Length: 123
Image (cartoon, rainbow, N blue to C red; front, side, top):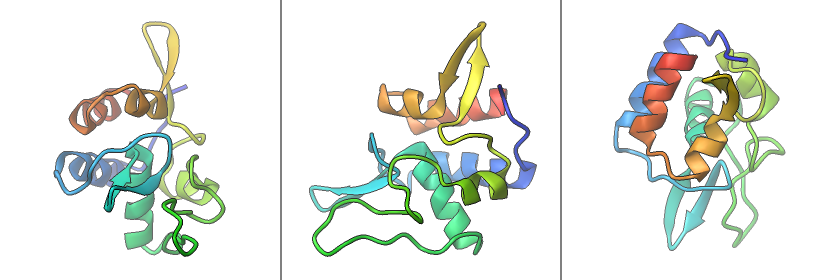
């Protein structure tokens, strides 16, 4: 179930994950925790889509800690999937005959560097 991502976007995403610019969070694409923005690995891909003009900037309600990319705060929006070539909403791939996902990797403690390595190998 690996995908054929747009190679340029894939390279940008890997660079962004390794940049140290983004603080890692879990369960949501992007949210504020103790005054800091925290990102899931897929939230960083959403930010790249915003920078490229592929989707509109995220929104959040007054006082709410969650950002929404379109209607999505937890899953990759369809528009970002289409733009990047990443199939699905969680970054599914097969490793050693078993299905895994980038969301699962992110939320179970894999670092952004480790996730970047996974993207290089499987996408």
